[in-house]
Length: 234
Image 1 (cartoon, rainbow, N blue to C red):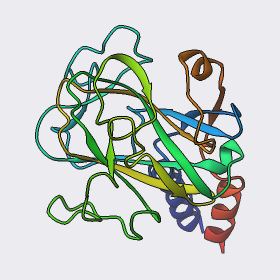
Image 2: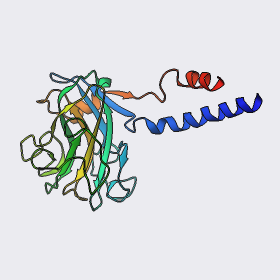
Image 3: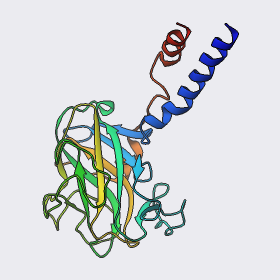
Image 4: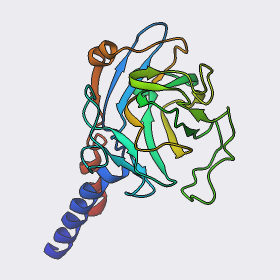
């Protein structure tokens, strides 16, 4: 009996250690209701996955490049080569519902070194992590983002020289997945904060981001420990 209890306790501990890894990396984010819709905001360094530590890198944390003055925390940049970076986010935490949302980024990009944006459900229905077999055939302008000359921090809501490009996407209720795939981005590019807005005409400001309501995801679903422990005892 003692051995059975010890085994059950050990399994519970393992589950508690593993569980955060199966949730979101975007655990800290902000929400708001500006304009005529809802917004969810998260910093670029709060990614869930990336294909390699050698391509999309933290500016300060991984010494890829010094973040430009005025950055909110660290930044993400492209240290060279082809790669991808993935984010999970839940629009229900902002009170949002399925429909068209606009992707907006606080970026520096002085030489219009753009990237591709892919969104699960809007662009295709399966995630691919294979650099040689991306989840969709990327085409301009359908998937292009940040093809703009941005010498200083700015909130860019267009994707292809003033046009939407790949910025407007149909999001699903609840959880969504987005991936940024390399097109041209380089060390010149700095990604600071990302925003999704259900008001397609909304133009963010630094003050809006600062005043948005901070949110965090729960460390574990309610009742996980009790439920797991009860099942193991049986």
